[in-house]
Image (cartoon, rainbow, N blue to C red):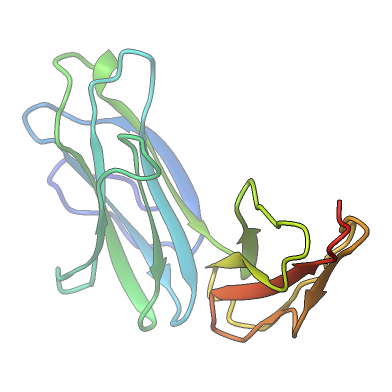
Length: 193
């Protein structure tokens, strides 16, 4: 882990994932950390305000070795915290900048935690919480979305189990490599349910 330095520059780069809890100074509300990445790796980088009275609205940015901004996030998943996934474009050192759109007046309300973690290739499937299939429907489409992480690009095979009697699924139940969505054709018999 590269520790934050008082002159605004990050310390030496490390390859290991890291997490640091620190505070932003109201007079210089920015901290910098450096890490080493390899082409194609996917890193999850997050900055979260700590404590119930935290005044921070964190922002995270990733810079190239020559200072160009490659990625940036302010609010993530409906919160004031910042999180992004960064796929390393080429082997080298990168700088993570933690800052805030608002900074507290005291040390206690300016505490943050930054985490830089290597994300293994993986995926998560999502579908609607509710789906209506009328009796006798020849076809209704259920959309399944794949959220891919860590550079996962492979095909995803889906198996449906526990369908009610009279309900069937047709077609290939595979999300193709690199795709993020599959529409599954469902049908029901006239006497269902």
